Length: 555
Image: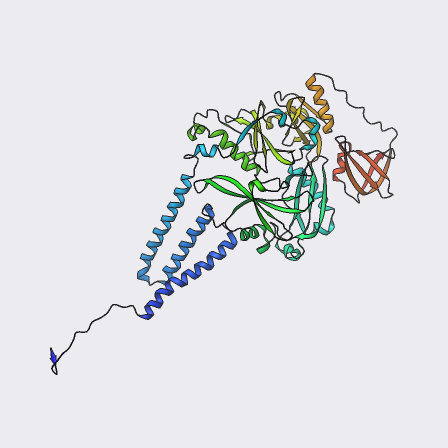
């Protein structure tokens, strides 16, 4: 068509997105992304997943954040677009979930039985590795419940701390070549943390499991980064911020040879697939006073740090070693040559491992029996494992398991209704034996017992550790044991005194208690003869029978 002699060109419509639509499209991406980033930072601060693909918690958090982001995006979109966005969200989440599930399944023992069985290196050992009777002071016979009782009694006498703090979990360590249980004080709730956070935790408790005494050590500078603290002073959160990619577990309290407090955490990785074959690769050690954290590879951990490989992890690794060497299906069906750590069934009918402790070569070694998987209440040997290096030795020796020995010892004094603690091993004249303590209903140690490993009906009991060893020696030799004559109390008289100080001293393998009265007079006795003193504190008034030097408690 021509107008005024000119040809009019047709109008061309270009494809373009209006600026308002472009802005709306960017808002649909950026605003949900910003909200998700804030939610992710908050979730990380609360849940503290390690930024490591081997962490299942990280995968779960990532899937949750993906779903959250796509949901936010769908809510900002027009209604007609929401089904498409939700469909894409479902597909993305399913893809990640399938990858997660496949990684979990691929990491299972079913596909890697041989690799699981080879994580823990086990060497053959001899009975000579078991501590001899002469080194019985290196054996920690006290269980944690007894240590807790002594620690609580000690804290109860300290009025300045008992109202503000509790006692945390105990750790068995080797302190100056002696077995000791240690526990730091802990905050009693968020309000008492808030009232004391500037000064920090003032001290820690040490319990000697040989002479059965507890001491409190006050610190010049308080511990501020502890498990019972909150927010940035929470120890796990503090370690996670310092090492965001490391997988950390087994945080526990220890002290070095100078008595300086530290928290030690095991650093682990999965050696099979993404999620299988847990093994420790090092440790993070934190100074709770300054907050300084240092990572040490497994071979470079300081000598004083006794627990890097936890006893529970070693027991699980040994069970894999003992059951999976001939394949996964053999461990389920024929069970040829399968063995496991001895287990005990609790009141809830679930099985759990237990083990004793031995101080050896400057380290703490755990000990536990090994039995066949058919559960016949007999051991085929014992395992000794170093909790600092994971060095593990198997000692071949058949006999009763620990729990049968405990029941045998309890039966020897059944009229007293004492309960036995988990035993430890002792080598008496070239033969292994179980040694344990017997406690009354209040948790006080009343007697010691030794049970022969091969013949668990051969039992000796006595009021002291030295006496039960000597009595057991006579028993296995077939000799009559003639105990020391009972103390002649005819020359003793009754006195009522106020205790101003209590001290214990180990002499010749026996523990002696010394008490100072308000008139500064000193009395002493064998601890085994005055076990009721475990319930006494400085400032208590007690009635004793004494000849002026030795004493016994008056009934």
